[in-house]
Length: 113
Image (cartoon, rainbow, N blue to C red; front, side, top):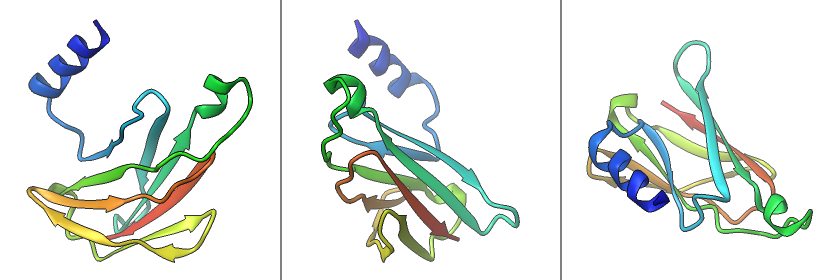
């Protein structure tokens, strides 16, 4: 039943301009906001793995972030927590995708427009 409703939403509702493509949609999620000035987006990726394992947090693949071209031209993407490193940006139809690294609980990504 869950898959049925997810399919309905994916086919009939407009897609968000920022979304996470992952094999673990029940475990991983994102929250994002546009910083003052409109030139930076901060994205928090969060793992709920500890909820499923009774408190143990194990590394999980981060998935792929999709950013719609409607947001503007992506100039640079970097991981700012827990490490500080630039992330590769791949141009795809209607936007860009960024492969997120494996993480345990939380990571923060900065997108410069």
